[in-house]
Image 1 (cartoon, rainbow, N blue to C red):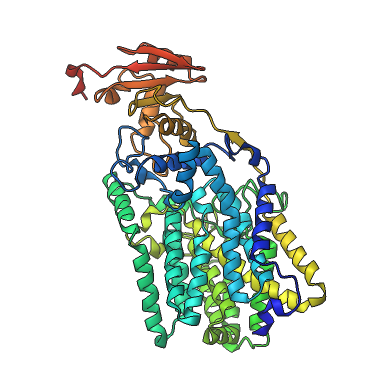
Image 2 (cartoon, rainbow, N blue to C red):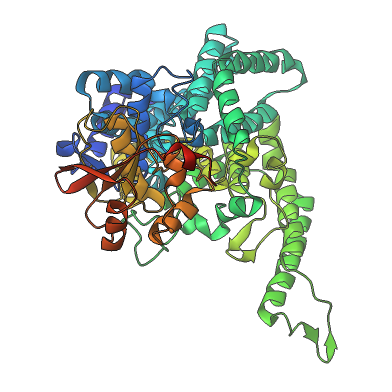
Length: 616
């Protein structure tokens, strides 16, 4: 496979240091407004970024996995709140020293935020460079992974931005099967642990990619190597056991589980392949920009490079008779489906004779299965399977992960169902998988697969246009970066009260108590101020929280009594709170105005008398 060896063909050779520098420069330009404000601002909004900063601060001041660490100080007086959301322990070794030295979790968060982008690029570069033998291919893969349009969806989610463990693990897995090196096996285990610690979604979706990898590469004589890989992953997972058990016990205690309806809601749609997130700059007015989690657009450049890589593998092979027959049958079924959709629910007939009604997605499911079977029966695919071709592996893995991202009941777009069921329908039957509510995030491993394919496609183009290699590589790099460009604001983080202003460990209600991500601000203030907040923002919302908000909005006299039975309740009244609610707080029995801090008033509601503590 000498055609893969970029360094022997005389084209540009961006080594790892040069690639890393390029990724860092692009990141600096992309987030240029944040750079001079890393001490005080966060990118996009104060929801998930401030939640993550709060978690980093909590981790830095509490020994992970201890009983105290599990009691994140929000949604007071509930215990085990750490299990309501991500733990961010992957970045603990970096974030905690920064917080210990500076006492500024916003700085720690921003440093990780800015570093994660080039780190993803570097890891993808290393994987693709190892597979193609081309530094140029590795460089393009790093760009395609770090700056994919899909990454813009998760710029508020630090846990998803730190996904460099996936390419790292895959690189060493490839090396192990190539060389049998035990050292490669150890490093694969490290990569798996890094991936599993990143976030709960990758803990579920990355093993699916690994399963596809093993099915593709492992034959009967290789079962010993497969057993060694499984053993390495098992050993590397040992540190996860107390963490996962802690999550399981606490979430089960509260009855937390994602409903089937919620999982369907957060699945991607088929048309989402052309959907852009609102931050995305390119293709405005051409592609829809109103997609959220389901904005799967990988970029035309990356997709085209993948097609070039695939075509290079199957060129010169005959399709075969059975694939043609299955393709024709699939086309016929699809035409029937389109006719059924076009006629509408009441117009399906031939002349005066009505035809039996049917759900269009059922025959279309058979059409898709025929296409998949036909593709697998082609000469090119069968040859790639027998040769364990890497390009075809990543094509198959991309398709599999895309089907998983479509959720249990794939749709064209809500509510138009496309297929009877998808692979996720089986996944939700596995215990523990129900805690993952966003199937669309299975697209993360797919983006990595597409990035690897882009590397192979780049090598094909550079071989074809050797005399213009520099221009070709520069054009590819520019197009990928442009398609992944995004813009969002930076937001100043509200200053917390000086620690000790409110007694350590006190229970505090910060008003107004709003819904959704707005509660991330009082939650952050509580972590920094050393007190527990009734407010909270996390992946799970306790069932009592919405009724509490309504009771306060309706100024129900005993709305806060449950909190006052166990001790004093401190209430902070912020600007913007309704005058009616502010007066209600001030006139509650025993309410004491303690002091004002800047533009906020602090009250203490003393513990209820003993005679009232047991009342409902």
